[in-house]
Length: 144
Image 1 (cartoon, rainbow, N blue to C red):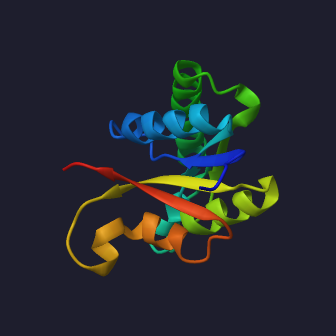
Image 2 (image 1 turned 45 degrees about the vertical axis):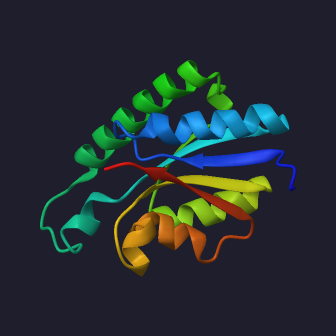
């Protein structure tokens, strides 16, 4: 069995995040692994195809601030220090891969919805993280 020392736990800040965090905490405790908690905020322009004739900086800043506050709450609840809480802006799969390489991560933990079909099996973000990851990936099943 692999021994994990550095875990990257990617959460989406929904009510389902504790399911992922509970599993990650269990693995961390068993292995003595350090957890880095990450949330990736997608750029607001992505939702609109990037062709918006207005400045979305303030909205993006508000989303970033809200994400940092929520991540801090989860960090406090699960004993994850502020230095190990990361909020990034970008495409979730790409940013999670980049951070995993940068931190020398042994295991990435993400949530997965149990839907049908190949991409639906994991969900688009979990599927994207799985493909191209440089380490093990655990997709924690989220019950619908």
